[in-house]
Length: 107
Length: 121
Image (cartoon, rainbow over all chains, first blue to last red; front, side, top):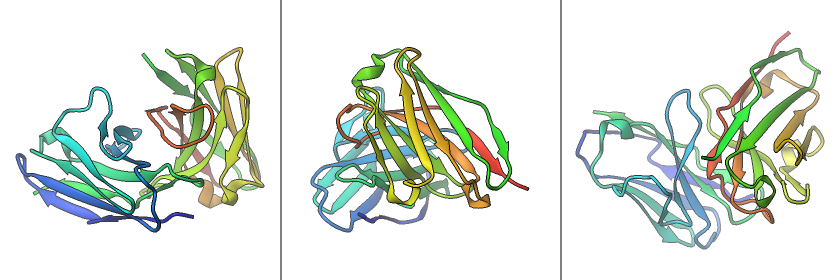
């Protein structure tokens, strides 16, 4: 199975900050990497697919980059509604696997 | 708009089975797949498996292969996931999610609201 490792596991930041979350795959996954946002008690929401493509309706302050084994999710200017948990997910091969999550908290 | 509406919360005893449904609307059901993902309390996301709504072909994670059955009913645009021989560590929220592909699993672009399954004696 492909292991997905996110860092950091948690992060404190302020509104307006630029934030970067990283995700590393245990083997090359090309660009088969998605990012999700999950708020407490809610289902995950797809933000970024194929490493860098913005899902329809997602604000442009979210961006993704990377290929192979190393990927990043960047939020250019944090808004109050962005405080949530973020997961990466590889869709290169089954079983599909997720990172352990990064909890983004208000400083 | 795409909607996935799941069945309600369940409480089951250890050893029992649970069947969760996921009714799709707002898109052509048979042009996509459905993945099942679970989340134990306070934990991360775990993929269980995928079914093509087009032809019913499934792809199940090894961990669940002997306990999970996935099915779909194209007449009602509904997908089902049955988990057998329940244990306390199966207590989780179970999500269905649409996959853009009907051929192979990969992405989850729309999610159901989740179904809490509690396993307790």
